Image (cartoon, rainbow, N blue to C red; front, side, top):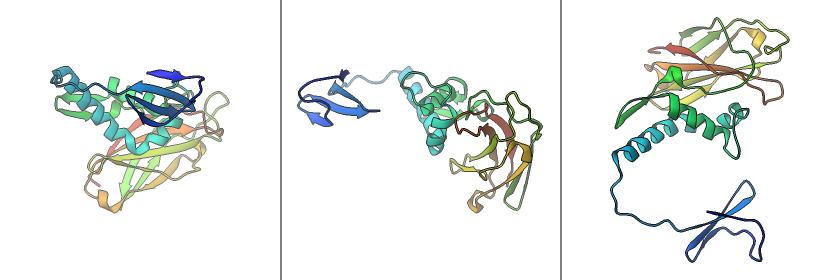
Length: 213
């Protein structure tokens, strides 16, 4: 694949003869049409594709959020979502082909330098999940203005719900409303902080499971 830097044609999008033009982050690219192959995929290729599909299904509902929560660790032109996807693929896939699953405690939904949540407790009642934590703060990496983010994942619907916004580290508790259609599920809970500037984050922690709800 080539990068268009200058030229009479400049950038273009779409197919022109045997080449395809595209643009990503204001950079124009050209590439040749892919060559079709009748060669069967190897077992290793099939395994990798299955792992990739498993990771994508898990993270896709929170793709835009991962671009924020992995913003401090992205490299080059890789997006935060791509970095989150790499972490799940490398560290949080379990099972054997073709039955791969997410190893939920090993998945990280945020990576950063802020202090993580501690002394976490979960309690669910009438589709209301109460999440509590130590409200401790300091002047190093646990600030009063840090906001708590709680993500709850339902493996049946393969979807997330997010807790209320503007809940500060010092609050020590928040309540997440669970969708009625999740009744009967056992859900997985993740927590992390986002700083006042909207860029600094903490590592996420896996707070555990609750349920069946």
